[in-house]
Length: 305
Image 1 (cartoon, rainbow, N blue to C red):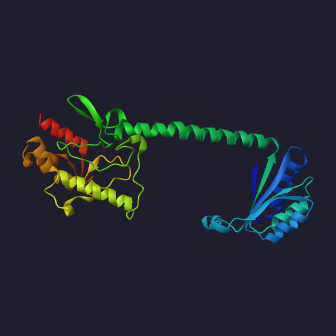
Image 2 (cartoon, helix red, strand yellow):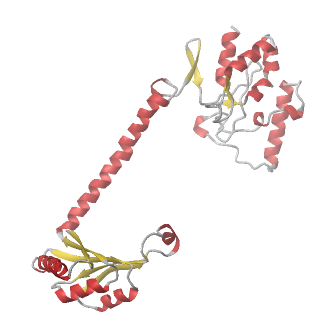
Image 3 (cartoon, one colour):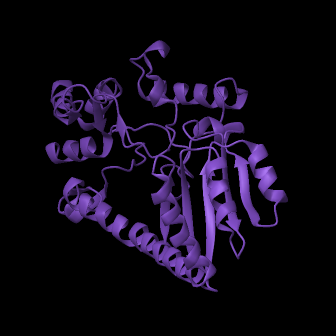
């Protein structure tokens, strides 16, 4: 049972309410009376603590440290006291009027309420566990059915001649001159989805710089028509995940001549395939233009049968 006593109420009404509350508590062995107040002076609680008619359950300043910064809207001091039975009506009323705020909260609690409160808390805990472990995941799954590009919310797969050759959102390693290459990968032995990671080496790391130089040299061997300055940085540096399936259109266009010569196609034919594979930014403003390497190579195989 919970009630509030307001100082603005008439004295007659206040005394009537107090008397009713005290009769409930004093005449029953299972009821206890608690007073919760806020904004009061610490000396008030110290005086109560010395009084044998009350038990100071808790008092504190919630505005200390980081917690105080986050809870800047609450009163400085908050406290809870329990009135010991038999409760003296005069003492009880004096305490209410001395505690500071114009409104105080009085809670009349049964001892059995502790068990009931525990059961309620347990039920709430179970309800939230079920919600976040079942319904929340269910909501995400339902959303995926409509938002995912793949069938039934699964990963989008890429097929060639009726066979699945990979997932569109996970890169693959291509080293042959007849295919477009993706970015280097530091995930395992290369594009290993179980070991997704970057190189974890800083831009001044000597070992890393030597590795990048080696990649530049290797790229130039297969693209002799490029100068060292023309090599795109992303073609010699790994992505953060090591699984990036996309490259920029610029990285695709610098490979057109090499792929065309390896396949016996004209550069214009290969460039036209790249043009069709370029994915524009969402709504023309979100993200950057990109080319999915796997889709591009599949389109190349289909056009060059």
